[in-house]
Image (cartoon, rainbow, N blue to C red; front, side, top):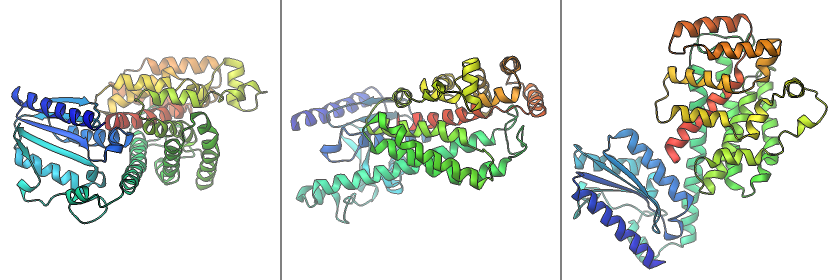
Length: 423
């Protein structure tokens, strides 16, 4: 074990040296600062990917490459035309200003024998995780039990991820809500087709549902049996729905989102904890939703169940059963492009076209009109705002609701941010 770790460190040093000899002016190494026992853990990947995303958003880089090794994951980035001292000062600030920064090493190389250190900029050596002593003193003297250190690191990662889930979910919900001119949905300037809800009511509902998504992420993150997760999550979802309806006096602001984004955060927790790749989020949703269609086997009671028996429309449950294929497709449509309003309208249009929505079916009045409306949406040039506004007026006049597609759009925005931060 010790020999393979040393070999991995030597290989990293050789790669950095090679990059520098190839003409890269500065090379940054991002790696987890953790005990050997955690170097290949999911916690190490979370730290490396998170800081990689911060660097990529802040600086223009010339090359990037990810590596897996016996010494843990690491990322190398190279830069041209950046002042080394200033960049190193910024990196030190990152390490010191974010709680997770204590768990990362951001090493900047200007040449094979010139590593910019903290002390070269007048900063004191890094402190120990658990006390105010210099970290190297505690490591050398083995002052702290490794189990205590590991528990400390795991707690930092756990808290960071919970905070991130709430922040990213809130960002996704608000980004969809603030998108204006979107086929009759609620916006900052319109109640759309919904006479019983407006922008402020939607906004006020967020404080009730955001903790729910954190709870479901935690549930997925702390349990190892995938097939049990939906049964454990269901009572939490029912309770959240009731609290939302009590608060809004019966207005359904986000019931569909509680279901869709709840599944996403539940699966994401499991996926991150088990060090799986991004596509496993969708596979895991499919696996944990295997029994979700059982209600269709009974005598139909709800409109959704009747829609299945009459038109084979599965609605949101079918989308979940298949692993959210429409969201997967939407993410492929977006790729790495920035989420502009025009692109979000295009994604929303695609979601309306490709998914079945029982609420839209009910408001359409007939299956034939439902299909006609979907075809009309598909014909809109979303780059032409006048066309969008014209259809929006039609949707409002005919009380059409595309809330199911809006929920899927929020899930798409959420997973876009997750993918570009942690995968």
